[in-house]
Length: 224
Image 1 (cartoon, one colour):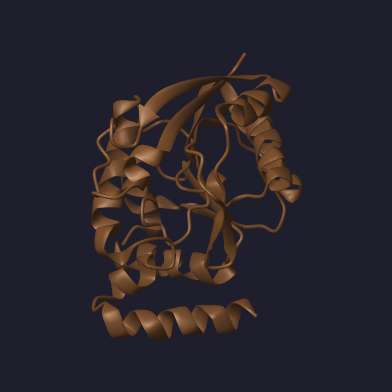
Image 2 (spheres, rainbow, N blue to C red; image 1 turned 90 degrees about the vertical axis):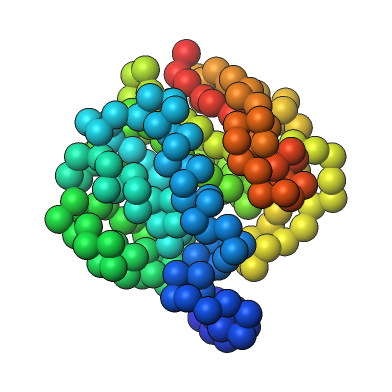
């Protein structure tokens, strides 16, 4: 079913976009802002103090729209990306090859359920860009359990979420959900973490002239 959906998406995209990268990154978001979004993600992490020696987990890394500059910056083997979509991860591997970053040895992980992921690594930084609002409540809970297990002492987990009171919807095969601050406070507390509201995406410099710039809030989670 997903292969058919992916084919239809690609066929439609080829009619409205031109470059291979636009087509590739349209699988994870608006094709016309992929460069802007890539730059924002990387600069945001740098602003939070990302170091080359950090070990980073990019949850929902997709096509590596944001992952490529992270791979380029981090020390060899220190980038981990995970996604539930094999076909999209394949596009990420093509992106690595095109950027000639194979020697950086990035770790790309395909998974079905967070509870099944068992890695011999602890992460200084964990990042979920435009991911949590695509997860149903039980999957979000499982994601936070994984984060709590995998986050190193003094590490941080950053994630943007939909906070306004709008009706839920869908994007491709994923839901688009709007939740209260209390929902994330409760998830953090259950998993031994504190949460800090960093501000709207717009306040943090993400200005794409869309409502999502103000609807989405960036949260920072740290272990208590």
